[in-house]
Structure formats: C-alpha cells, structure tokens
Image 1 (cartoon, rainbow, N blue to C red):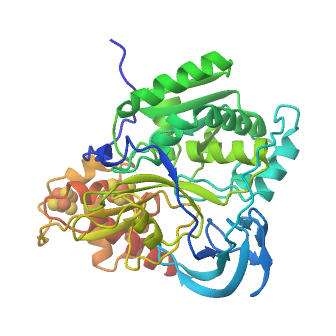
Image 2 (image 1 turned 180 degrees about the vertical axis):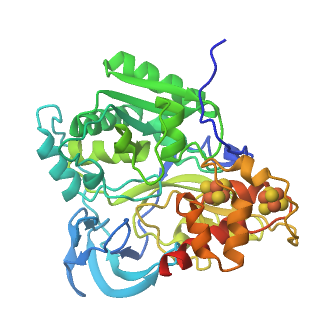
Length: 435
Ligand code: SF4
Ligand code: SF4
C-alpha cells in the first residue's frame, strides 16, 4: 500500500473538532450597522488613509494606499459614509487607525461581468493583485504581489496551494474547497501563471477526502494541470515548511524562504481571492470565517465584510449556548485570545471560537521527559530554550535557533508539566531582538 505523505520531524495530533461547523454551507452575513475597517490588516507597513471623516465611499473602492514595499491597499467593504477614523486594537494586540463606516441601506449588486485571465500577461495580473489588495488569507496576511514578484535569477518549480487547514475547529477553507472548487482551481492557475511555476500542487489532509475527490475530478474535467495530494493528518502541516516537506519533499534551510528551494506557497482562500480579483475585478473586502466551538449556539461558516465586529458574527450565530471560558480569534493552537467582542475582523481572520472553561492546572518544574523535543517540527530543544529565556539568557537562546521557532504550540501541547513554553518563545523572541 502506498504511504500517505506527511512531514517527518515532530508534530502532534490534537482532536480536530471540525464537526461543529464542517457541514454548514457558507452563509452571507446580513449588512452590519457599522464596520471598523483597519488600515493595518496585512504584514508590513499600515496603509495610508485616502478618505476623511464625512466622505462617502463605494463598495470595493480603495480607501487605504499601500505605504511601503511590504504593505497592501485597503478597500471599502460597503457603500456608505465614513463616520469617523479612530484607533482600534486588533485581536493580535496591534493598535492602529480604522475607518468607522456606516453602510447605506441599499447596496449595489455584486459584480457579474467576467474577464478572461488567460489573455492577460504576468505583469498585468500582478498589477491587479496589488491594486485589489490581495494578501495571504491563511493567517500570515503577507501581501501577495510581493510574494508573487519573483526576483531575476530565481525560478519556481512548484506552486504549492495549502488546503490543509490543520488548526482544529476551523472549516472555512474546507467549505471554500467544496463550494467554490472551480474558482479555487482557476485562482491556482492564475497564481501559477504569474510566478511561472512548472508544477501546481494542492495539498489537502485526509480528514477532507471529499475535497480531495471533488478538486481532483474538477481538475480532470476542466483539464487543469494541477496535482491534488492527500496528506496524513498531522499538525502543523499547514506551515509552509512542513507543507513543502510533505508535498515536494524539500526542506527550507534555517533563515531561508520557500523561494530559495524553488517553491511558492499560497492558501486556498488566497487562490479564491485571486480568482475574484482577476476574473471579477473584485477587491478583497470580504472573506469566509468559521464561527464555532462548543459554546456557540449555531456554529456557521460566514461570508462577512472585512471590518465586521466579532459581536455581530456572534449575534448571527445565535450567541452563546453556554458561558465560554475563552474566546479565540483564529485557531486554538496559534490564535489570539479575544478580550473585546467589538474587535473587528481583518483580512487574516479565519475563525472565532467560543471554547468551554478548562480546569485550571498548575505548572510544575520540567521533568526532562523530552516530549517537547520530540514534538517540535523544527527540531528545536524547547525545554532548553525555555530555561534560557526564563533565566534572561536571550543571547544563548538566539544561538540555539530561537528565531526559527514557528510558535506552533506543539511543545506546550505535549508538556506534562504544563509549562507555558510557546508563550516563553514569543517573549524570548521579543526581548532577544531588543538586545
Ligand atoms: S512553538 Fe516553537 S519550540 Fe515549540 S514546538 Fe513549535 S516551533 Fe518548536
Ligand atoms: S515536555 Fe515539558 S517537562 Fe518534558 S522536557 Fe519538555 S519542558 Fe520539560
């Protein structure tokens, strides 16, 4: 029997918990009464505001201009009026300016005219990706036009599309692959054309066999030269490093990028956004987000305008079925605890989880069991790094490759002493950089 591929080093198997929302088709959120559209919803410099208080805006209109090499344009998700520009705190604790937009009661209909992507050249496609504010929707929000600008002298063997969605609970990508499969495949072809990739691959874990079958038959029927690869279920396979090891069997060396091994990676949601940008000329102003967890009354996958407050998403899902112990923006392994339900969603918001309270456990001293070392997908020594960091020995931690840590949380997940290892790594990186 053929072995199902996966990455080799470390990894863990948390319960996938996708049962709450995986069968729920994507539903469009009714228009909220107010949106908070942040100027900083991508990796890099915040966008520069192009509108002022009192201005009217149209849906899809550019309202924030990319302000640096790594930055992205921001567009209005609705037609309406800018009531204010004020500071907000995002789920990842970043403070930034945001437009407060009050939507008009009537919105124009969605674009339906389609444009032929095959006849457009690479530079035209890339310009539109930049203009329309496309960023990576898997969570990293790296501006796609920067990722897809391949420097002279470099070439791309493989464009690897990430359909793994390995974080427990999240099902937005799963529903996108099932419901918008053809659009995802066209987006993958567009991405591949821009970067000049020799191969296009979509990696999907075997807990989504229906997606593997659906995309494989669609690709065959439409004649798209795309390989769909089923991967063994293992966290954190959605990380670029692990995904490339599992799909093209190549390792990214420490401090290098996928392009250094001839690969570019993008998420399935990003491919769908590429389709909408190029074929519909639609800017990135809405996305699918999973509202799920044990404490949500009606878990759903929701298509919502960027800037929607999490409180509006919760209300759309019937509120809480039980008092949650914790609210999380993103997945439970790498997401952020949410302290204010009026925080707005951004381009990178993949999920909102309401999780039950957990029994408080005290941490105890390290017993040198080595489980964290076995679980680390990068091959680090989390227990040693944690010791250096708690002793304030940041330089030693740096010398032992602290900066290679992906903050995946595998070490904390397996630690029988319940040590806050990943929290330690994050703190160590921050303080180590300042030294
Ligand atoms: S959080 Fe960092 S140290 Fe811990 S397992 Fe992940 S990569 Fe390794
Ligand atoms: S898993 Fe926890 S107890 Fe075991 S070696 Fe690592 S830090 Fe120590």
